[in-house]
View 1 (cartoon, rainbow, N blue to C red):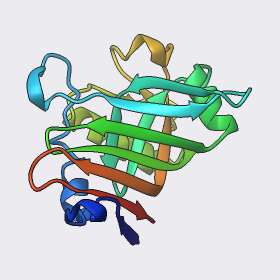
View 2: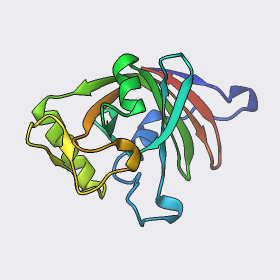
View 3: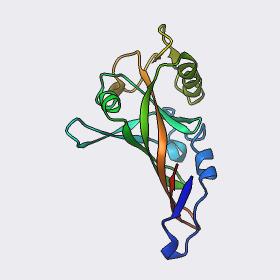
Length: 176
């Protein structure tokens, strides 16, 4: 991994990836009703068929060095991710603003899908693996996810940029 200090001209330190990645796990709650400063919305940016951007709020999970997004394959984001793998996930926390650029792939391996169901439950969403073993279902999801079952996409980072929002500050870009 290569790191570039984007705030060097302000004599601000280069940020370390490890503490930022550590905050992306279960502490990054999106559970309904948690509200307040510890509830965070992730934003997924995809590419429409005409090349224009599409940005939408999503429930995203960080696990095993990647973001995981669950959606119907007939939704705009699902169609976009299937057609064009390049995408980005962004989130603002109390310590940093983060954008992760990456490549998405549809995950159908039953073990990986089951792992994401566990991560989802730990994050407050009562998901379970559907009867096919290759997608998730739950009593509810975001209306924009379409009807169940929902496909699982893994977004492997190619780069990330973080801006520290607390002292001493800093901004860093990593290339993976």
